[in-house]
Length: 495
Image (cartoon, rainbow, N blue to C red; front, side):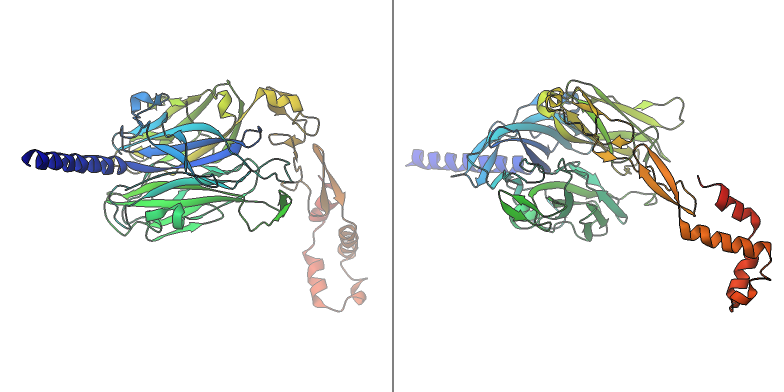
């Protein structure tokens, strides 16, 4: 009897330990996102995901392992939870380490996997678990990072849809008592309209509405936050990103309205509200020669891309944290001898064949007291050298290694856009600008010429011979305001 009681006690003890371990491991979650694109082979889809955990507690990312594959989560899976015959494990959540911060206690990585569905869908693919970290608002219960896949062919692109992509740090720092903005970077390969909203229902599970005193601008994907709820607080954020067609289209022979989303991806992260002793607007910033926000770089597989991020502020910059594609590496901070108080890092990336498509790289600078800059995000579009087989370049552009060299007067990745030489308007007031290919023409506006001739006659004769034609004092005032010098400008300087 004693032996039996001991055995039962031992089993209960082990179960309690396992539950505690499971809950401890689960509480390490720091958010993430997932996106997808068709591979072009029947109903096969390539997924790309980012996940965040506490430092060295997810798949095992540390600052020393950036750029390496880490594999400590072999038993956690992305699953097909809707549309498939039953819940299926598709791929584990191990990834290539892309960033880590021991001081902020997070790691992040990116992974890719390919899965072939039995039909066009829709299918829900997600990674679920239980318990975030302890939160200052809302319930730290279950999470779900997911997306909905539908592979019906669009009649405007003659291809299935490609989901929008987004990214974010696992943890953002917003000083307590300050008004702040978090701009969510979004890109859509189909050039659809992308909008953001707060996640609802199963998209966010237990953290729906867990960021108090905040609004989201759906058109600019900007979160505006008043960090007044809790000093030194921790809050979970769940955002849903959706793409909409610019015009009504047909998908699988069904009309698809501009008000109906084409696909859905989720983004989740944490916000912390530390108490910092400085003005809310006193924060680091990125400076030239850093590329402007939302810049786009085109490159090819196996061609190395270098990005420089320069930052400065009223206090020394202690770090620049990066959110990057898998395989991108970056140097430690370096001082710029030509710019006093400015530091920089150099990020280097050689995209591989499975990374053809659109990627977002973001940087945030932090100073010695913990104030952080706005995000500086750059879009990198990776082309495949085989893309030249079908000659994708329009308007007589030349394709080389998957990239289009445009004829003068055209721009964009496939030379599809005519550059508007009339913007800004190079013609003066009396001429209308006519846009042409790689040039413009200033076209004389007839009625303005007639008006100038009449006014010039009035100026020459001082209005005495034409006074009888006008019965209002307003015309006489206008006559006296006109000068021969301005008349000359209008008549003889059209361009």
